[in-house]
Image (cartoon, rainbow, N blue to C red):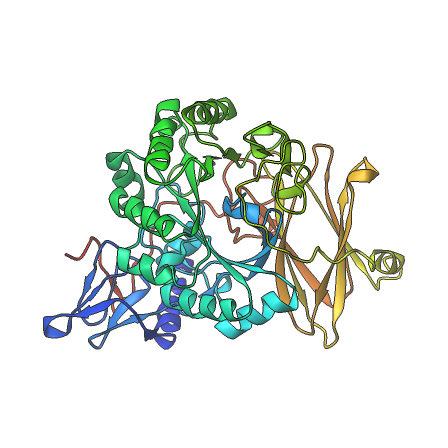
Length: 504
């Protein structure tokens, strides 16, 4: 019943939000062909493509998700498997609705599969508002991420073009199942490409993702040749593609077609969506993969979704001095001078530096804490547990005046604790991430005035956008995030029939 209701609202929302789409080809009898993804979906009037968000409306191709997004969220650039561009920088992350793929293990299936979207997961932003938020919070990087930004093509182009005018960098985190035409248009406005290559096995790739490998490799090679910053990640799924041999095929392609300086990330899997019959990837397999590809000549290889490992730090490839130190999604430059050279031997690190302001120090903590006993301030606490080492905090100021909330880490070692303030305008809603920063850290504590409401969302891994807050029953789950996919798919509205295959 809930899914049926969601579909009705989904249909009404996207119809009213229709905007002209790019990369379309008119065909006979009012049909259109979409050239954004390699599927080249052919749609009759009223029909949508495989992604569910590009539709033939009266003979013209339209996009139904323009400005329709997940809640804008402040994270760190390490969240996107980007370690060599503005290390430690805050980013403004936005996802959208729909996807050109349907991976069996999708971590963001509640938004990537448009037919499963819920009303509360969709927010509305204009390009101008996205830029305003970034400027208000002095964030210098906007990231297109989560479900997959390929299907958000028009909004990404418009907003990224505006970002460039304001000196803001743009990051495209994607499986990159995109046509070469689409990749060429992105190159005009995108600075950073973080590409997830699911597997180098074409058969397994098609079976698990419902896409195919060749266009991904072609588009990745193309953007690298255009001089864009590229980093490559590979999700290593337990007992499927988590072998050393599998890792070496990824590394061989990177070394042959890109460069030994392109960072490679081997990412730990967590069970989700339709793929819950295996557990998390054993860390020793990831470590073995990393060692093997570095012996092949990859200069920089990292492990993703792994804590307490030397494999997340950046080392000088010449003298092996530690240059950038990381714990979770937190990064510190520890061995670089102001020109980006190793302090030990003078070798230049292959990375891009971006100057950015640090977080607002917690000047309001004492004021808020003093008011807790009188009820003029409220306290929330969250403890790290199992594999939950990061948290999205969504706060909303229901009042007419600007306020601050303040948060700190719960840590027996006071030297590792910190205080941070988050400003909120009148009636403003904002979401930000806090990630465990030290092995001894126990959790976080938040203080806020009475006008502020807060929802806490457990983040299972980087690039995972949680949609269920802990008060709705998510707290305590250590293996698979809620909501669980029950295998029941919603039936699309008759007026929005979905193309099941390529459409060719």
